[in-house]
Image 1 (cartoon, rainbow, N blue to C red):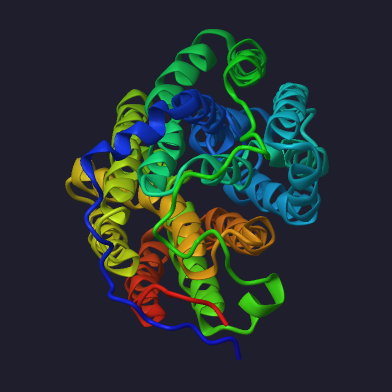
Image 2: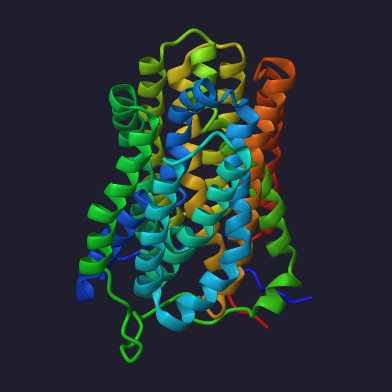
Length: 417
């Protein structure tokens, strides 16, 4: 087994001038490009908008909710098949090129969703294809870009960049709902495709730059300039604890979010009210991203995970009653915001940057599997029982077990040998 030595759990206080990392070589532009790329990427746009399309699709084609939510399952299968290639391509061609090609592929995929004919097979194939084409717009890509530019403020930089999903969660549901209400669901999907081409592609083209290979790295006081190989990481308990813990956490959170709008309308809210709560989710996703990033630069990561990822247990109970949907949405949003930061940051802290792309690809595939399983599991339980009640109780249990497992990671490694 690969052994890891254990330094003190908390990070040393960072000097006040660490903000210069954002100014050095205009690294803030890289963060801004990644922020926009995440906001209009594969992990945000489909995830936070499918709830708006669910009932119009069911009304037109007679699809069950499990058929509609199966799109996520096939999307995640596409990610599983292509993440390894994306990691290789990023190493070979750089983040910028891979991201631009993937953004165009994602836009093409959304345009394809607008052309659905009522065939579940076509629906599922479309989701699989646009995931394969759009995998380069996920945090797998952006985390690699951020990690190369930042050291002491890496947690905050990741938090800012990945908070782009919160913007999507905030703005996309009401905007897409207006488009769908006025012009139909096909126009809604075409509008999303056009937005990617007109906003995301130019932003990455103009703002994102690769870290010059010849440039010296930012002076580091951590061991993260080195690290484990993939084979070494696979032989540690840390790797498999991350796999199991985040599978439980991500499946539960992923099951809640795309089913939130149908869940709220089933409880008696109007579509407009439910979309409003879905946009409130976005504010809390952004808050969760930024709060997690700030905390991770200062405190032990598993403790941060416990504080931010366990409260949605109460949210599940509130939705099962149902009572106080605003409070439930707030807790779910904070957890959804924190989980991306935590996966990337904990990989960097426990395994280093030596083979970060390959190691993180495994964790990202695990996330993709769980994120694909969660929504379809919720929908299948609903189709069989006519209620989300049982799914909420299962999710609550998973959100207790996952954060507790992370406490078993132990302290950050000081050296690897």
